[in-house]
Image (cartoon, rainbow, N blue to C red; front, side, top):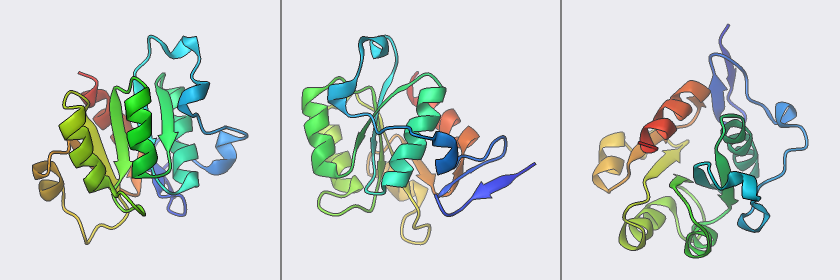
Length: 157
């Protein structure tokens, strides 16, 4: 059964991902990471939409990752400077430092950290241009949970 949750910009073939399923899930900040995350891949999720942060945090936690969040590119830059991050997953369109500017910062300052960009604006960005800009992956919202996990796991290699 195919279920699509367009309102929250995430869709899944195997399971709908919605705010109600995340329950009282809290956004994980770097200062709240526990020792139990030491052996897990830390993924910095950057998006100015709190619902997307909450949904992606829940999905990635259930898949065994250690998600950390930032609502802006500038906040993400601060997280990167103070925490060990293995992968960055960022929206493109955000106020202040956008995802493309964050990509440039990550590639200059943290060249070994893979970064995947995502957008809900299909008409403005194409995958080829994003990858040419240096991104290690690209997702167009809405995306399926399986697509997200396939791309994230590829970045872990």
